[in-house]
Image: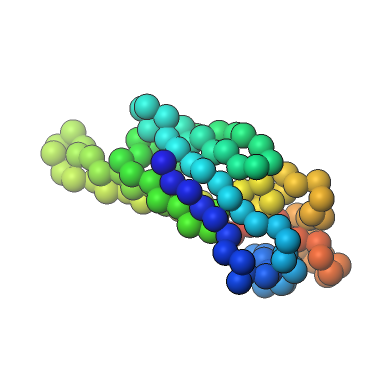
Length: 125
């Protein structure tokens, strides 16, 4: 289980295009946890409950997980059929706001958008 929490000194969000969006009153508090076989990530925050599959279509078996600032970090250590150690790591930046699920925050997939306070999606991956 991991927890990600936005600190009070972070007063803005920067989208992938480098545009800063004031965000003084909204914070991120999310609790993430892996299911028993570590192929699904569940997360709960004050706004929703949801789940994600791990990378590789849910075939990635996570050995451990760390989170910070809505960024998830997964690690897998295993051996292939020849006994060679195969290590994999993945990161993903995702929360209710950054994936465009929050109806209170305007967002677009249009890379030419120059409208202030409209966030560009996708967020950085």
